[in-house]
Amino acid sequence: MKTTHPTFAVVGHPNKGKSSIVASLAFDDSVEISNTPGTTTKKRSFPLRVDGKVLYELIDTPGFQRARRVLAWLQQHDVPAPKKREVVLAFIQKYRNDPYFNDEIELLSPIMEGAGIIYVVDTSKPYGKEYEIEMEILRWTGEPSMALMNQIESSDYSAEWRLALDHYFKMVRSFNPMEITPAKHIAILESMAQLKEVWIAPVKESIQHFQAYQHQKLTQSATAITALLSEALSLVTEQTLPSKEATEEQREVLLDSYQTQLRQLELASQKRVEQIWSHTKLNKSAPTLPFEGMDLFSKESEAVFGLTRQELLVTSATSGAVSGAGIDLLFGGHTMLLGAGIGAVVGSVGAYFGFAELGEIKVLGSRLGRYTLAVGPMESRNFPYILLGRALYHARQIAHHSHAKREAVDIAEQSGFKEQWLSRTLRGELEGYHKKFRSGKPIKKEDIRAYEALVVGMLEGIVSF
Ligand SMILES: Nc1nc2c(ncn2[C@@H]2O[C@H](COP(=O)(O)OP(=O)(O)OP(=O)(O)O)[C@@H](O)[C@H]2O)c(=O)[nH]1
Ligand SMILES: [Mg+2]
Image (tube, rainbow, N blue to C red; front, side, top):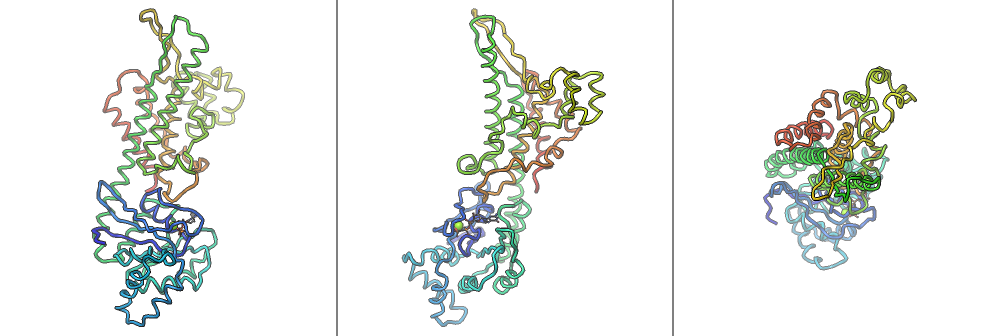
């Protein structure tokens, strides 16, 4: 194999997280992962490509199945160290079509073709001598190697593992494929580069590309989120009417269609963000989208992703919905706000939380005896914050979602999120743009760009690097 980029074969005992490590480091959710030992049966290469250039390549392999037999075969050949490699090649040559040794052939061949070895162990299980057989086989290849300690469950035998692994590997690192951040990703790449001297320079260069690539994903996400906000707030939904009077049912149908369109805009923006972060399978297989079952217009959504009740009141107050006594009440604190007093001040709780007042449904002038019933642009001043809060939260969860994870993204993880994304000054800045988006006038490119910059700043604050 003639490669110009660093290549690593991820090997080890069955069911120790080899495929999970490959998925997380290659940003690839198509890697087969399951808790059935022997899931991976064929070697498969996963290159990480950025702008057409391969930064590095990981090879997923099956676990050792016949390690004892293989080592026995190798040891029949009593050769000095420089010749051991040839014995491994002879083994591959002899058994390449023998299904009995399929797994060993699959895992040894990429190593013999020049891939660095990454040996994966699960340090939540006790160390055992049987692993020495595998490590001994790897030693026969004469190729440089490192060990990754992946603690799958909570029990911790890493101390004894480390003592054992230090005998066989010049580098031993801990790595959790479920909780990967760009910083951890880079740290592990730096260690991996140490395996071969010729890889140090290319990996350094790759890391720079990698960092630029991560930031590019943030800006692209900001573009998708800004498009959502500007399109949703300026959205107008219309329906033709046969006469000047619209029935209650016609109004309801229109409002329903308006809400559906808003939901679709949100969904399209979420899809785009998932695509940016290479999460293309999220909504197909077992994992569910964040917010699935939590509607954009639900009370839960307001409470979780929008403003706090106090902030919502301030928004209403600044929009003139609350006056005099209302504002005094506002600064009295949460307990008062939750009391019966609220209703007395503005008439209905719905007005505070916005969704009752998405927009006025208007009958527009006639053309050829036909009238138009219209709703939009968005009138609720709270709605943009709900939408933005949800979009930022979704982007953060997606950016933090390891490609090794096969379970749902957890909405309950949002603790502390609200406080992190919206400051008072920021709210002031956003409000100006929301007003423009809601004005019904064409939206200027420079306003879109300025809003994107604000969103990039918010994303930088909530996505950990
Ligand atoms: N909680 C947790 N689960 C993990 C971790 N690493 C792997 N798993 C789970 O362990 C199981 C095995 O993971 P795989 O990545 O398929 O393991 P493998 O070594 O490729 O297995 P084979 O292909 O069968 O040899 C899967 O259910 C993973 O979700 C981890 O760090 N934490
Ligand atoms: Mg596997």
